Image 1 (cartoon, rainbow, N blue to C red):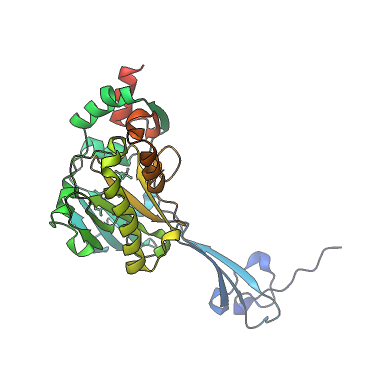
Image 2 (image 1 turned 120 degrees about the vertical axis):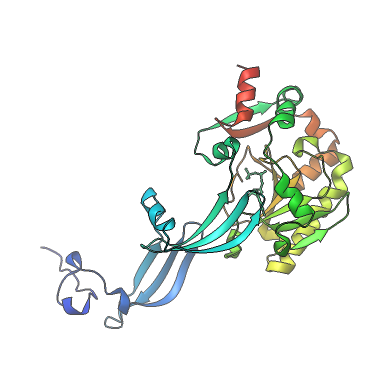
Amino acid sequence: MEPQKKKLKLEEHTDTDTVDNHHLAFHQFRAEKTILVNPQSKLIAVVGKFPSDPDSQGVIVAEKQPLTESSLSSMFSSDTKVTKSFQNDVYSQYILSCSGGVGEVKVTSVYPATEAHVKKYSEQSMVMVQETPNDYQTITKPFIDNNPLSVDWVYNILEGRSEVERVVYNDPDPDVGFVLLPDMKWDQGILENLYMLAVVHKRGILSLRELNAEHLPLLRNVLHKGKEMIREKYGLPAEELHCYLHYQPSYYHLHMHFSHLKYNAPRIFIGQSHLLDEVIDNIQLDSQYYAKRTISFIVKRDRPLFQCFQKHRP
Ligand code: M7G
């Protein structure tokens, strides 16, 4: 026998209809409890009831629609309200309030952009590279000397020319000091997406590869003071934070990333990130640890660095 379909709480005028053909009357739904909020998936789930059926509960899972090419015309329309968050060198960030159902969009712009920027932001397949100490000297180091993305934006931060009001902490010591501020990728809206950047004052330390025992006081200072300042400013305890370095970085001026443990931060995965705690420990065991070891890293296939590796190690 056909199971009897329950009469659900439908739009008022369809009270006698079944669920198959009609919308739920969302305007009548009373959310009682939020059971999941996922800012990264832009998703919320709630449990609640329709007052006209107090014996039944419903779960509603709501998810924002992703942006598509058709969203662009709304975004770039003259009706869009534009609010600037910050500008540093060629980089700037805005909140666009768009019509046409697109809503609020966080926008990062690079203008004017070089070909290297276009490649950095383009979708590409990834490849794994094993970089020996000799490869570093003969391939990576010459690449860095000739082709790096400009770090003028870093100097603007260190010298107080840009993002001054965004700085959370500045230890001006030339050897162990650093500036802590929100990463361009975090709009400071949702704590679970916390993504902070610590940029060291000392110049000339290109990356993880160049770290040794001489840098231990600097690394410890960033780790401990950075966590303390994030707790003070955002109330987030140290044990809910990641602190790590990327290898390879995009910008060759030493910097560290702090992110919320719940945040699936950009390039947090194996082959790209090195926990600062472990970096310190490795250097304590052997000052030349990062000079001597082979380091594997994942890089986009079209990035100029991978092309250099292909040229030298076809
Ligand atoms: P990376 O590991 O060198 O490169 O990190 P990635 O972008 O490939 O991860 C550099 C970090 O600096 C990134 O997380 C960027 O989002 C961040 N960043 C880059 N720029 C140009 C700026 C900027 O102008 N201001 C701030 N606050 N962060 C930036």
